[in-house]
Length: 365
Ligand code: SF4
Image (cartoon, rainbow, N blue to C red; front, side, top):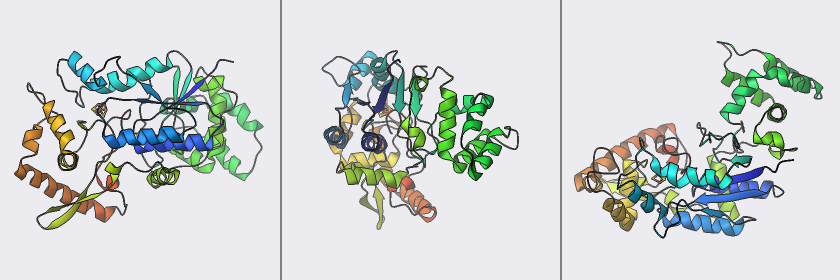
């Protein structure tokens, strides 16, 4: 049988780090290749996290290099792009520094790629368009990617015989009724998926795996897939617990720091990993960088030249004028106070609107 590779990308963020620890602990028999693609522009805390993980995991993390050069990979490509800074509309950085090295690493081998999107998130993460790469989301209730689910529901008849061969109990009768109820205007695919998963995650997974065996997906080449029997759903608190209990710890930039504005005390932090100058960060995160890592902020400023800036409407020099800092902090404080009333989480990242959902799934998991 063709060898299928199992790979897990470590972005430097908390969720992919926790996923690596989780898979390493829970499935020691699986031969998982851990890899990371360094841009050369992460905060020191991210490099420390990867170092600690490397010591903890049963095999070394492979360091993928986007370019064979003595420059930081980001600077190498920036030079090729003639100083044109990446932006949310032109994300050459993700393509060149993360996706292309990954696709080169796996080549044409059939690959299962494990992605650390959590059970409390509503995003799909980076899904490769290459047919030899299949993504699996172990922290979610639904571990399968969207494309697999669409095909599965369009081919229910394929697994009917397999379903009828499973031992029956009361739950599976309800499960069967749901499974064969056609999707319609009043019964959407998402509703059907959620009801089936709520009825019996393991049976659902067994059926999807049975269906996959009839396709060309990489998992079709695997005899057994232990995640089929995993019905755990992990949310943000679980991620922080895994990191703390493993001894790897939570990167310091997630820790809240007090600031004062107009006599009121607010708290700020960074919400994610990634390059310290990432254009996806919020204005308050830029202020955090300016005040907590002034040397990195200065470096970020040095990239802004010849009309290019990290933010669309203002340069970093403008953003750090005293009046502007005051305005950003005031607006942020108002927003967090409003959100705190709706949200009792201890983590600031919960209070920062859309802090994690917006942005780059290849960099911030
Ligand atoms: S973290 Fe931001 S700047 Fe860095 S590669 Fe990812 S998207 Fe680009």
